Length: 393
Image 1 (cartoon, one colour):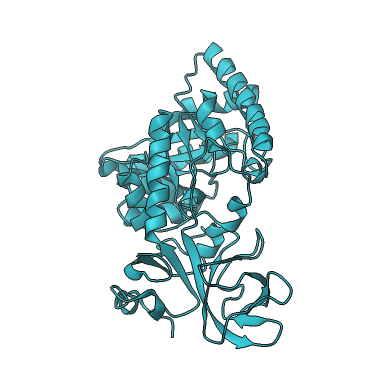
Image 2 (cartoon, helix red, strand yellow):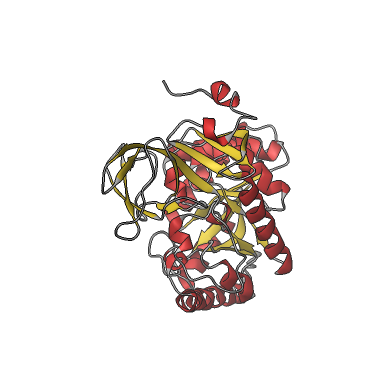
């Protein structure tokens, strides 16, 4: 039977060893150090950071980030925004396009609820029809509201990711002008996020990619300024490139999220010397369930960790054999010695894995088990509900 939140709360104060496997475990000490380093980085560069909550999907963690100095949070889905608002977060940016009328009605309703609490909702657009539909939903909600609210709108420009976004320059200007024509919409600025650049392995490659982003932003801002359109905020960046955007002089806000947990894929990047030394903080605790002369098998298969960015990496605690994780299917992971003839764990031993991609890994779990004092000798401190798990709409 899947453990409930109340059942898991009984683990609080217990040693790490009692955590059943497989489980998603957060090293709260490492997470706090990452959070502190990010806040210090933002202060040093005099730039806002808006934590991307699509990574952890947890309102309690989002509140910690805001308390640490984040200007608010980002999400990608309407349902994620609703979950974060229900958890007490009041400044939320949907960094994505929403065009379905039913979802836009929910967006408009949420914008009014947050405004009534002294907060705000923002959203990205990249198409004239999307702007028209958003305006229609907001105007309908305003007509029924006691206190009509506005929604902040960012024009998303395609700066190299080739996913969403209007072309920089004249097309972006035309869209911004359309946003300004609607009284329920407030033009907030530009979104310029280059997702592909986050995982370019060398620092030089990432710097070069963001240099092109900055040129697109500068050209678009200049064109808008000539037409009397003020761009108050340029938002974007991720954990992989945030040092580049922070140094550009064009960006006001960073959207980094994965820095908080640091998955194996981000750890494979060459670290830019200007970037804080973020640590792994999200782990999958697993147990050895079968052994042979040449490999061991643990109970953490693909249902416990995402594999879109590669398989997990074995986290080698002191005294743990050096191993590699191999595909064992849905419910199993195969562990092999890093070097031929190397040692393997014994039946029942604990093995810690660093997921390849933290965001979809978290979405596989109802709860994150927060521990303090280290993975080997620590204790369970809190149970963190993954409030927006499965919030895909």
